[in-house]
Image (spheres, rainbow, N blue to C red):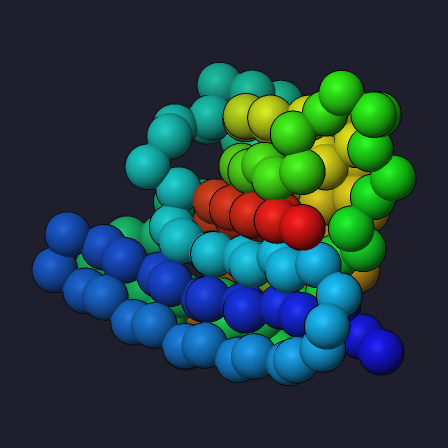
Length: 144
């Protein structure tokens, strides 16, 4: 059986919002993911300086392949739920090129989330009809 996952793809701008959801079911642990435009500015960061923030007039990236994260083995004293928030650089070909963890409740969740998001593929963001590299924020929630 596959991991129960609710993928919520939510991209919001000051004057623009779009949401898409997909769900797969089973009796195993649950995880969910949310994608949004990045409110943080990492333009001074060498890694993220090449990725634009999604702005008005841009068509945001859309996940075309987003595999489920695996629920990790946790230390005995760990909370069986947690959240990982990542800044993700999506290149002009729709591939994940850079990942930075902004917040993580448990290292085991962090490892699973980063490994999973690196496998995601997107229809690239567009500006004036041209594919452009952008940064987005992805939030993955884990619960057993």
